[in-house]
Image (cartoon, rainbow, N blue to C red):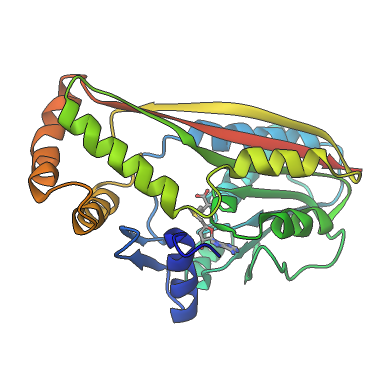
Length: 288
Ligand SMILES: C[S@@+](CC[C@H](N)C(=O)[O-])C[C@H]1O[C@@H](n2cnc3c(N)ncnc32)[C@H](O)[C@@H]1O
């Protein structure tokens, strides 16, 4: 693993400690993974994926649906809702796996009929061809051996089963503001995130890996754009503050820049003079 892939290191540390508190001062991350985002700007993409899987699973009697990096089970709950709305819920078996087992009791509470296990995407604790669908959202960016992760997710799929990965494109974030100082802090933050992510091109790389395989077909990539006034994309100050502190510690920005940022941002947001745009990419495929 790259020494600088700080987010991956933070996940590994949390897993070793048996907690869902993902923290790393150098990476500037401090996040309790059992708490959900305040307003999730990717909700529309999550619903689109649930609908895509529902349409794919329509004719399947068996519906063993795996979410890799399932966290507290939100995406499987959405899939259940989408299946129910179309009357296709018969045979639905939600299965979640996550490196941080501390999140799984919440998932189990949400979906009592589900099976939730601790595990790593690069060594999935499931048999070959066991699953009818596999989904994985915002995980591959943290996986140093992404090719192994893709191998594993294809391996556990049944022939005829379907897969969907959704990941952020960390090269594409843009800040819109007339305030050059706010913009400079955001540029520094974007560059820092890029340097701390194991796989900044995860969705494009996953797409290429799938295209090169002979055991999958109908490989597609589609975009979902996010345009929000909240620079934390729904995570709140919990995420922003430790990251700016990490940038101050690295002498990338000054303490005054950080103070200015927190003093000025609310008014800029209020006046419609601060927006971030970012792109999520959804990669889907069917197993032959
Ligand atoms: C950013 S969260 C995304 C959670 C959820 N999929 C979503 O979209 O909201 C990343 C999740 O991946 C999990 N994770 C990180 N590394 C993993 C690995 N090697 N194998 C399985 N899960 C992993 C984390 O514990 C966390 O729950």
